[in-house]
Image (tube, rainbow, N blue to C red):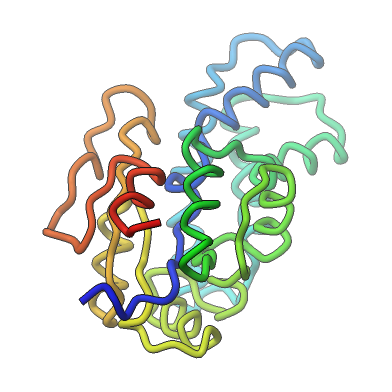
Length: 237
């Protein structure tokens, strides 16, 4: 059944890169350089991320016109800076902090695993991140994508069907010739309903210690792998 799969499409935030750890580290470095005290930067990262889905829902619902993720992140950042009483940052400093999402570090297994998978499959992002964000992240981290696809290209935020279907269409493939690789069951539920195959790669510390969500698969997905190297093993790469 999996012999027909030609492309692997990847969720990125959480699956490929460690957004929480990366934002925490940059926040701590900013605090040292700007003499900012009393901020729990892991909680700051969690609060910023918590606004991610609600803001995209504003776009999905039509209440807000199409807006790329960089701009949604900035609106959310302005709110989180207020909530955490962080002041004294210049506009260039705030803009640089907002672009921390362009500089997220991959999980340790990612680059080696993707390099192996690329020998056999087309590798495409299928992320809510905008194109510039994905390109800058890939350039910095050495992520060997064949193509950047996803929300901005499709003008639809996951889990809207267009995000998945347009990505397959642009690859010249049917949905059943694509496999969604993600650490989130909700992503798999949406992709599977449209005919994609599914590889679940849990990231049990994405949300820090004590994470309860997405630690185990919600269904018997096609492939369950512990990391990207294990996924390469299971797919014969």
